[in-house]
Length: 398
Image 1 (cartoon, rainbow, N blue to C red):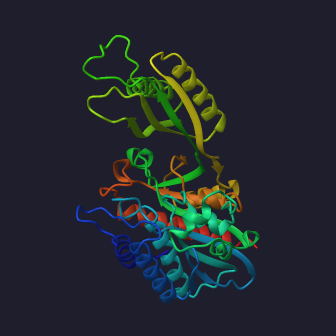
Image 2 (image 1 turned 180 degrees about the vertical axis):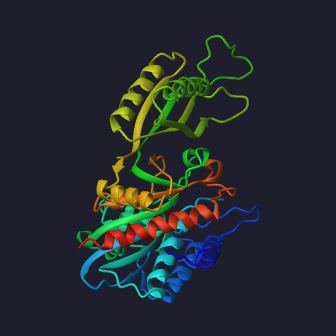
Image 3 (image 1 turned 45 degrees about the vertical axis):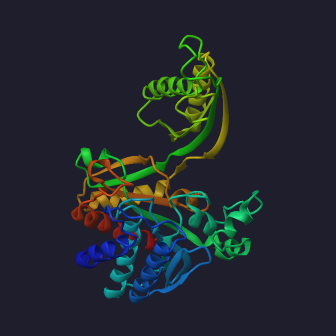
């Protein structure tokens, strides 16, 4: 299989460089001018590759080529947005690979049995609308009755009707295959070019509040203080020790810390943090939070409250698709490893409605969501070869 690797590389760089900041990172947030500049370019390139293309009401770019035998859709692609000061490959690489597949079938006069759709999703990285917004809207997974939704949509000149117009008939999806950088270090450290994703972790977040007593920082002796921040810090350290020894999958992060009244000469009477836990098994997450609550009960300098704010279940990739990717790798003598994804993806949303598969390629030193994010071009070429052959193999199944 001969890919036009120069064109693939050029398109990754063209699309991925939109939103470059002064310090070399990429900021292309969903719904911004930078995002729509990338969406317009992606639309133009998909049209050049011979697809019928439109941008839906929530900003997803969809390129389509009708199949000769089946109306069922084989979908591939990824997101076009980035985090603040992110890298060039996250999401963008998978969208550009889908674009190159469109060029490949056009230039080789390949008529697919199924309709193919190449998608660049909007707002995967999260924000006020929540992560994987574009793909969730497409799958009909947005709770249209959720309190405050209309007001949030209004900030982006969107309406409930726009979400409804962007929702597709998911029964027509045969499968979705997402090509993505690993964003971790398993493949890189083991010198393995391909990761076959078994599933995507669930994500649960709690807002944890520690309540102590504010007092004068100079006149209140250390003994007997009820410093909310120190109590929260103890909880974070002890929780980290526990989480680190559960297994090789569970991860936990204390972030978004706020201290009140946040003054240098006042003992904090209140401290808040967001605790995020990720694992494939929700039972492990639930057991962990119970253990952390027990740790909190043992800290007598503050009272703790726990409020669950996000709970996204893990998803399993389709076993038949995993088997196809496995066989393609073996047939082409390409080394691979089956791994889980510790990051969320658009595939997570689509998996609730249709079979999904994911193909990973290594991230240098496991870095992502930062300007130094990098994946070698040889690995991208190998990954594209596996992606293309997987799509063609799936297309044979009528």
